[in-house]
Amino acid sequence: MIESIEKRVSVRTYQRKTLTKEDEKKVHQIIDEVKLMKGPFGHSIHLFFYETPLINDTQSQIGTYGFVKNYKAFIAGKVVNTFEGLIDFGYLFEHVILKLTAHDLGTVWLGGTFNREIFDPMKSINEVIPAITPVGYPNSKKSLREMIIRRAAKGDQRKPFEELFFERDFNHALPVNHPYAKYFKLVQIGPSASNKQPWRFIVEKNIIHLYLERTPGYGKSLPYDIQALDIGIACCHLLSSLKEDHIPYELIYHLDINPQNELIKVISIKINQKD
Image 1 (cartoon, helix red, strand yellow):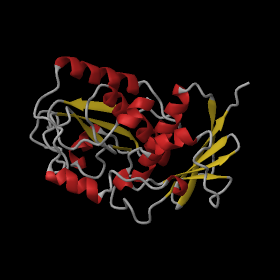
Image 2 (tube, rainbow, N blue to C red):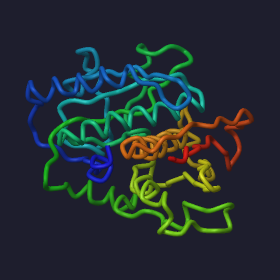
Image 3 (cartoon, rainbow, N blue to C red):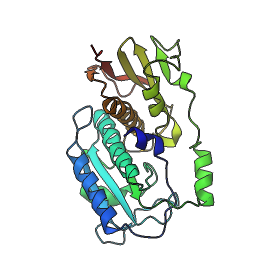
Image 4 (cartoon, rainbow, N blue to C red):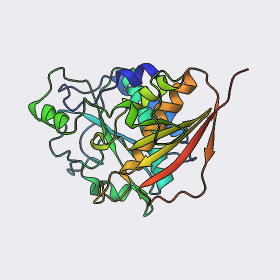
């Protein structure tokens, strides 16, 4: 997964061709694998694959408002619309993205830029379709609109390391040569809505505390907590890379989470020291 995390980019312009039968089979295998997984808070997600930008063979276009061009297939998913459920969606959907990346298939997270209403018949009253991703072959030549979108979202920029990762408290930046820095750099390059990067980490000895620092007013028009997805993505990058390096850990849950707070201590990761 580390290689896929480093390799992944958001693809908004695709080649005008459908997936080969072999690649479509890989996509279905990935979906089946992730359907059996659970996120850090114990939720699974339901995933849908479509070979055209139409839903259930109707003329209801998913509509990406010009943000994506030429895609021939996409994946959508649904989950219970709670703070913890959305974190798990972000965690699991990013697994889908990274597994597709490993097979050289292009993707991009789309949260607020598609026609969400056409999915309404497919979900229960307490569920939401937080995001979709196109799936296809990247076009090496980006469209002018894609370049403008990337520049507007600062897609090639990330917040400085010292603004995201801390030691003991938020007054002390984590040294860039810290033993866990390798894993935090993999979080730092992860995608987030409008590249807001709302995740913050504090390291206390062998315990890593993950916080959500909300962007004031951001995502208020959406029917779900979009920045909870970003926390799930951060969890995916951190936990997947620790697992790949065979570093044992356990999760510590906080029972007093208030999703309405501007700064939320979401979960802690205790690194079990090797003998």
